[in-house]
Image (cartoon, rainbow, N blue to C red; front, side):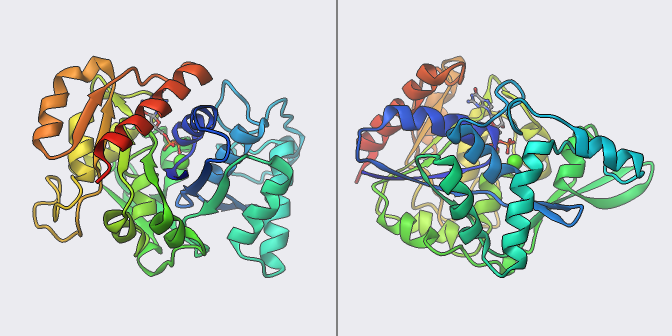
Length: 335
Ligand code: GDP
Ligand code: CA
């Protein structure tokens, strides 16, 4: 079976680890990773979400933190500080630096981000085919208003430096409108037997991937069933700032509202976009946590088959059970 998953960082990577444990030998997993969080620092290209997936599946992740390398040291950062060179708010450890050096060196030599990602994965052997959503530069920016006035900041600055403490007024995936899907992305979606949306951020992770022209359309048109898992439990994100970025796009922070935001397969427009400027909805199936069981009828009334199962990724076994529930639901909604 060919499984395609769209993925952000921590939520996506942890889910994928469970998915790997749940699938049968011979099943192939292709991951389309968000690159809207990418940032250039010290002349290096940093791809936080691709690296989180690669390190998590390859056994190199800092487990408690959820990002960066295990057993990390911070000598380079300390030396940069001595030179007065920032940003101090972004944590790049010594071991992590090596990844960004290799990536940047290869990009400078003319390789594409897809080729570089494949090369990095030769070391990490993540057990999935990891594709960036695009080889073109896309950077998510967040419109905010604070003492310094109204301005747009890089998503990393919003999240890591400002801790999402100010409201997000708009989310703009700069460059997405002219970006092309990376080689293999549209083919993987078209050839998939199942398409999964892990419990990744619906706006700045999955939403950014879907903003690359052609990807949303390919998912909407795919022969495979599309099943998503809610990152929202009991009206709040399990971790992170999904509530802030959902508010910026006019979507309530509930499992039901996120399902409606993705929209039912075949439906044009979506509840969160009443002017209907967008192509068809995306979901055949949606999993909510058992805490949100009361939302099931409303999601089904919206045209999306819905089940309530435990959705906390407390360990690999609990996460594998989530993945099995998603694959089972995919079989039930297969047309
Ligand atoms: P990021 O790029 O590191 O922010 O990671 P993702 O976009 O892939 O995932 C972030 C989302 O994962 C957040 O909205 C969280 O609510 C969600 N999340 C994290 N842990 C869990 C969990 O155990 N269960 C569920 N259902 N969602 C989770
Ligand atoms: Ca991210």
